[in-house]
Image (tube, rainbow, N blue to C red):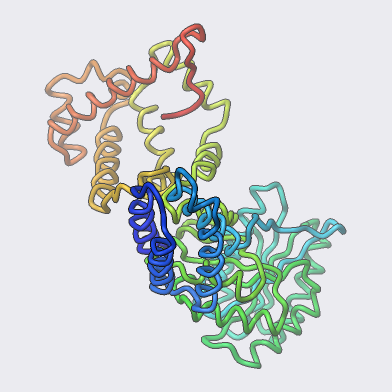
Length: 444
């Protein structure tokens, strides 16, 4: 996960600060040196680090902090606030044209995931109730047009193409006319990229921009490239004046420096972050939530939102009804496990839980949980509908047959049935009458 190294270093530092009854100026100076080193190791721009540390230090040396009964907590609060401000302060949402038809122009270097991001953005807007169309304006690489068509098909969004046309601005303008004529209210223009910033790329991008007059120009940058991403962002912003940034691959093995630098260096907000390969893995960027995750305080709001996306009120009511009537089956049990998978798997869920990140949950433990999911799914899918509905009928011969079908030992099947029984008992406790003071509101 992004920021993992930075997060661990800051959490260790703050653990030491919390243990101190009082803080001296020497303590603060030492802590700020460690913060500075941690940020530099995370590939944060050195000018950004210098300004950030100076701001934090100034506030930490105030009398209200040094004289506080909980100085360590006060320092953490200041760092949290400054990290939030560094990344933009507040969420910067997409804006839409008052005309009812909006054009978004995507720019970026080759290899940043721009075409895939176009599809992710289209799906995001589609789920928001919009009617988007994609425009393939990389006229230099036929493979890029093919790729966007595949992406469009996967997310269920049409793609406008003009093979043979060598002027990207002509394709973009024709796509805009076509989208408006056919009743679409969003056009996402995927432009060509280069391996490096050059004048030819910028000139073409300016021509496309002038042709379609986008409501927002969004720059796609790759978090894995660190400070190179920030340098590229500065060049694009200077040439075409971008309105916002989409940061991709933030879930990868990256130090996170781009996310902490790009807003300060360019003055432009991060609007979205790519948190996985799936087309659903595009999230609005919340600076305060990201700061909380870096400091090990979790991100419960995003976790709740993800759960709500996967589980609506009607489904929750149906599940509660089944449990009340003692009709909760292994099929339902499997569906509940699927909800966690849809939310990004155990690693994503753990990363958003307050305090858990600070407990150093190992990748081995997470991988073990994921493997358990796979085994349980194989076992349940090897059962007949009758067996899933009523595990009590699972005698020895049935269990042996399921073991052969799932490739798991009988002991694993016994363990699954035991877990299922325990889950059912726990869930029934949460569906007691209201006079007991508890009522289930969703899945487990």
